[in-house]
Image 1 (tube, helix red, strand yellow):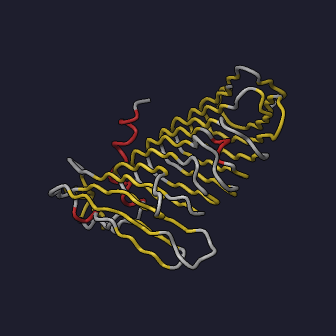
Image 2: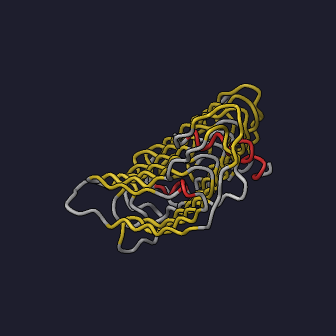
Image 3: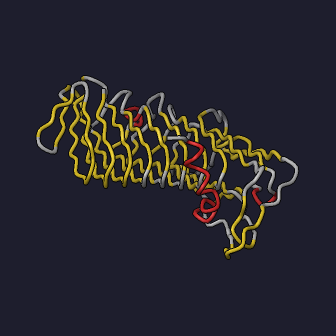
Length: 287
């Protein structure tokens, strides 16, 4: 599936998804671009709070790169844009931090040509709950080595690569990912140190790779429409997949064995228990 083709039809819808203040009618309106501007983002570590920082990022059509590395701050980075309405807004209230794209004010359906909207942000080491709200965008996430206790990502048509290359430093209670017609690759999921992962999607191509170090039992709930899903569990890790779906082909390779509608991989240590519900498409179970 061509990643660029996935994004194009949804660019206009993306900004609506983020409630970016657009009044729609049947007329198309060209989004006016101007000089390219770079805004610096620097949110200091919160003081006098025993609660984790609740960080919300809201981004429309564009690109988002999110990595560790804000050594002495909560969030640092740059936002590069050439639409003045896209100027980012930062609001801090108690332990709540909101970094959002500015509202796009146009009449009609916006046409995006030559628009620049690139977010390159780094997160610090402080305990945090992270929420991302995005439209039709390209996302690159490296979340290894952070201190995440909650993670919630919701986007429209997207092209996303997300990884935990190192273990999360605290117990991640819930990792929830909700997406539209997209291509999403989630890797290093054992390193998320999660209790529960919930994945909801429309039509698309999705990979959930549970490589890494599993330190506790993990419950995974996947619901998807007409799509192609690949689930990767390393050999030697105990896993159990309960599957239900319509016109779906299930293809297993490696250490997986079928028992009715249940697929089992024998292993030692903590167990991954996965429930998958699909409308139609293909499911691949791999090592």
